[in-house]
Image (cartoon, rainbow, N blue to C red):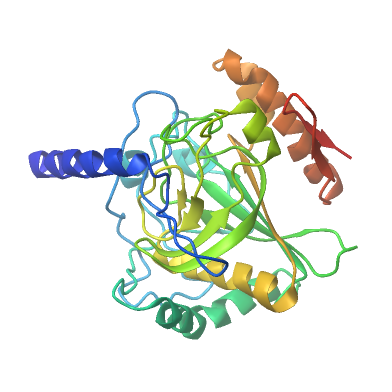
Length: 332
């Protein structure tokens, strides 16, 4: 069994090595679509690739309600999440800290990859809209909100959903998702083919319902900072938040959870005319990460990211973000 798994991993790694040059997606056409491709969040050390999802408590139908947040074993999570060099709160065994709101775990349910994009969207609306409305209702919000914020924490393998009912309202934490997989290590994306998940401040700028990895939402990488600090010729592109449990530079959320996120994001952008902000950090506890001294080359950049993280945590408001000539974020 171990030999078969290792052989499968080597074969997949070979496939992904070729795909890595194209980022997480294969460029398609205009506004409602853009693709994505495979990879796996790591924490320094060799990149690893994972193609299979851990078992889910949700069952084969994928019709999980808010209460049906399936949980993976620590062994499975360690295998698919090499980014977690140090245990996250959710993996701390006896010292587990209960996250609030409860984490929505990845599931094993697989969408029909032969379906068209429009069929996938229709199926997602039928299966997930009630769940999404329930999540917002439990947070004391109506759906759809005026704007959304996805906050991803690579070391913790978490993606938080925050919403704002009106432009002047404080942001409210709606729910948190477990990230199934990503690629690379802690630190920003700087060039095409480096397999890194970006770190910084972005928006969702493109939707593609017919990717090989189910529903895909493109992150606006590279931004102004990335263009200054990254490879001037080819910093990379086509970074997605999508389904499945494989990725090269993207955040893979599992099919069922990607449908929930898709409904949230497309409704806000296409029906409300709002924005979906995406903030990606190396870890939730930036102070501890910086104090560890393990990544001296990242210190200045991470201290800058921490300014933006601290601003939101303190004010429950998004700062106005600019970028100076050195690629440094400025928060007002």
